Image (tube, rainbow, N blue to C red; front, side, top):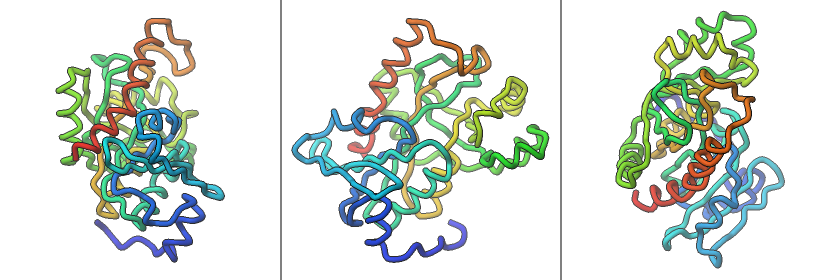
Length: 260
């Protein structure tokens, strides 16, 4: 668990500013997403139970019931500190299980767009400033490894495989800047044995472990940057495949939490 986290202050005041609610209005089960719109989750909830979170700033979300079980969903915005801060704030609430919902770029040549991915370990490659003054290979070599294999993750993998969905597991590198996702740096990550890269997972799992929260992550492979650039337009079949994964992900997350 490491050292004790800093005291943020009165939980009621912290939650009022960051999530626009009282601590007790956050459910034990929480979905954390950096970019997926909240409506993608709302459409699966029991409409009469929805309570929107109305913060002055910071994060947006809601609490509602799925299958009779309360769930809070929060949109953080992209980036490791945003996700890490939210998990720390959730530690001031009844939250006990946190599930990350997002996407990764696939580096494994055997993977396909739209496959689902559950991380086993995440490398802490966060930090733009680290890239400007160092050889990127040195950044990779010095990146601390964060464990991601958890009982929640194992149950999540079983859920997906039970539905016959293409499911991948492996090592992911959390990068702090899309501007440094050059071909050279991506190839260096692949040579170092990383299967995927993204921008939040090391912070998510570090924060969850630090605060004693059960955690797992479900992502889908949104691009294959070694095969085609992130900026390259997807073909109609690729768009259809990605759209299917995008639509499935929110419900899969809710079903996973309901089965915890």
